[in-house]
Amino acid sequence: MEFQLLYNEYLNLKFDRGLPAIKTDSFEYCLCEDDTAELFFIGPEHESFTEWAYELQPKDPNYTVSPDWKPVLSASFNHLDVYDELIFYYLLFTINTTTSVVHKNPFNAMNDFMKNYCFFQFAQLTDAATLNDAQKHQLRDFFFFFYLYAHPVNEETLYSFSFSSQDLVHTKTNITMEHYFSEYHDFYRANLERYSNEINLTPEEIDACKDLTLQLLGLLEGKQPKLSLPPEEGLDAILQLINNVDNLIDTYSDNKTKVFEMMRSFLLDNRAAPYRDHCFSTLLQNFVCYILYFNFDEINHLVDYFKGDPVLCRRVINKIFTETIFMQRIMWQNHIDIAEYTRVTEFFDEQARRFYL
Image (cartoon, rainbow, N blue to C red):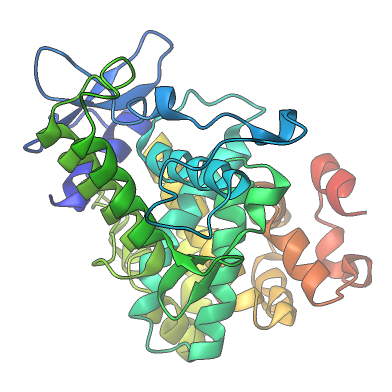
């Protein structure tokens, strides 16, 4: 399955781009009654990719004093307990719902952007020659934290996983998630008759779910070809920086004014549209994650460039600081007091002041 095709359709629906619908051999996007969109199997039964495992959610052992049952896959993972099993289910659900187009509102817009921004960045890191291994590890951990945090997941799930080389593992048991998810799908494929009341899929459809879940996991782990944001008229220069981390870092290193000029040109262009706005927000957060993450003082160069036009400066600064909470964590990690950056904070709007001051 070519995931880039599904990703393009995801963006097409998410940002109402009006492009022809794309189908794969197994899945197609369908609109739901609540203005969301989900991947469904192609065919008369029309089962949702994200819903097939709902009925298989493990019983929560936290509501039982002494759980007396074993995990479903205990034969394959004898050191797995029922608490771990539930956390693994939460991760599976989080990964699979990456393909869901949610109905955005003021309460979930930031989380929706952060989760999908981080997902897009995972595969970018692998091929980034301008970053050393330590920087890649730092950013991968940073993106994974926010990918889970923004879903959102509970605190236990948030801190249960880590990377070993390129493998996502359950830290406590050292089980690789690729191995677990593969065994998970194979188990239910082999036991469809026993679980016929919970599963309404054919063996071939479970195989398709397994393939897609492992592709999504592989993107998180940087094992799959990196994704690209598709072209849009007038955004060629910005997309070159977004779709190739090295282009952003090299361009900024050689001539940072050129990057700032791209930001300015976009802001002066009146062709507002959801996908164009998403691309610009992605560029700004790339500036945060690939430039400011490693040298926060570069924010001063941004202000120096835009300060002659306070209106534009205000727009850029406040989008950077309020569209995500990446800056909050970066400052916390590096013990940075934004109050000391008065040349920046003078452009804060009410929301930014509430967040940071």
